[in-house]
Length: 382
Ligand SMILES: Cc1cc2nc3c(=O)[nH]c(=O)nc-3n(C[C@H](O)[C@H](O)[C@H](O)COP(=O)(O)OP(=O)(O)OC[C@H]3O[C@@H](n4cnc5c(N)ncnc54)[C@H](O)[C@@H]3O)c2cc1C
Image (cartoon, rainbow, N blue to C red):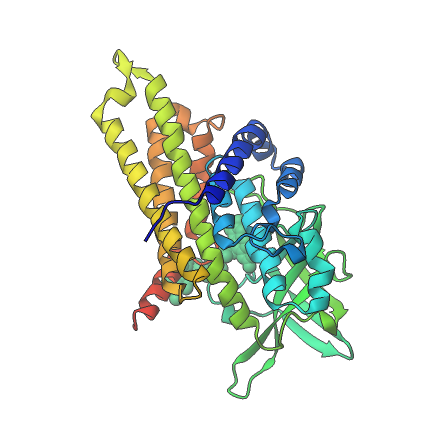
């Protein structure tokens, strides 16, 4: 057993860390404040090959694996989570469904521009009326000749409304099974298709420089060939995508938790109270030690889940554990980092204010903490 990174993995981590510090940190606060999408940062990430990290070279990727993506996400989130979630959603929710389940034609048409980061794709599972209970999907798609006619709406869809969004994959009810259950399928809807409307961005608590929209489909027609994979496999497809995605979200959460350690360490050495740096007080030292402990153990949890996934072993429970633990400790660390910064921690000019606002969604997105506990309990046989 060896949890140390290879030279290649370490080099990737360092290059993303340098990029985050040099290209993201100086510009992100303004994007966050103004709720603007960081197109230039995304363009540079594309040039670095980050969107192609886990994809083979034949599709324009970097020939790496899912763990490489996780390392990049951790280092980005150490500086900013809006940029990290843009990459996470683009790769694990946007490109992966097409890469895993798409036909040769779909891959040839969409992968080159998605893998290069030139275009983004969204993943439309959640609806205004249902999130955790995806079986409650109301959006319908009916085959009319050689076209799907889609009606319904999707809520909170990341990367769905940028200037470079090329498509959204949408889960929809395409029939009823013999046992009375809904038949769910996934369909590719290109941006700009008539009947596909993207609402203005939400006003969010955090992730303010990431792109999130409600989508509506009103007699929206796409070719029958836009079905992703087999008809009726929608449920199995999104379960696979979400299982993997949880490891990526765990990595992102670890990055945020580690960013809280970085900022707190720096501040504890600078800030004076009662004639000495606050870092001299054991109360502050113990807070920072506990934060480091949490980031470290959550990192081991996602490394373990990723290792199992890459070995082709079952990893559902470990991915849920990693996501649950990492998101919980990210919120803990954001709270303690804010506390260490005192009143300045409540000021948006300090990165910890962003960490605080960005941490909570990690306990909700890609399966809430309650859903992770359900998955773990079920896997234990309950
Ligand atoms: C910024 C942002 C970006 C997002 N991006 C995307 C995206 O790109 N694509 C996408 O499809 N979705 C996206 N989502 C949606 C996200 O995945 C859902 O919000 C999440 O899965 C929870 O669903 P919900 O909001 O409907 O909550 P609900 O499912 O309504 O849950 C409400 C509460 O009830 C609890 N609960 C529900 N069922 C049970 C149960 N059986 N037992 C115990 N407790 C239960 C939940 O844990 C939660 O606490 C995004 C959300 C946000 C906020």
